[in-house]
Image 1: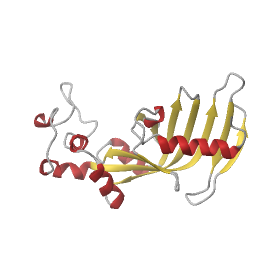
Image 2: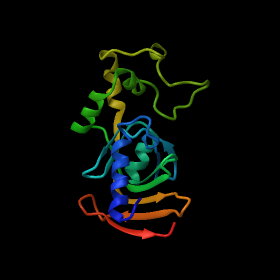
Image 3: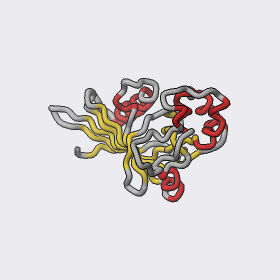
Length: 195
């Protein structure tokens, strides 16, 4: 099925292109790991196949924003149990709070999704279980005027991929390939490795 390194790299690209568009894709919600070795599941919002950039939405006040600002190393784990394909990706992360890409992502979000940025910052302590949202927005979609303060808390996490480890589990014998590139403009170089 995967006879060449080009086939494996194309499989990575195709799966990452599909993941943000298909909520049912198991790769839609990968595990993202920051340089402090903290891991969290995040929704993949976009993949730029030209630059190999992953895009996630985040709160600018989240602890991970400060971690990535201090140490941009990131790892992302994708796994599709049905297809028996795992992709481990590494790259450099950046938090974007302003600019055309951020404005376009904000504009494309629903008001119901934007309301997440109205509440307390991620990790804020509470004496009781809480969504962190102001009580008036629990289960309620705010209007555009009510969301004005939320925009300051919205940011993007963009990860530029520099390494891929593609692993196909097969009862006839697993297959594994690795790819790396020196920078965002460099071509991928691949090699076969033992699983």
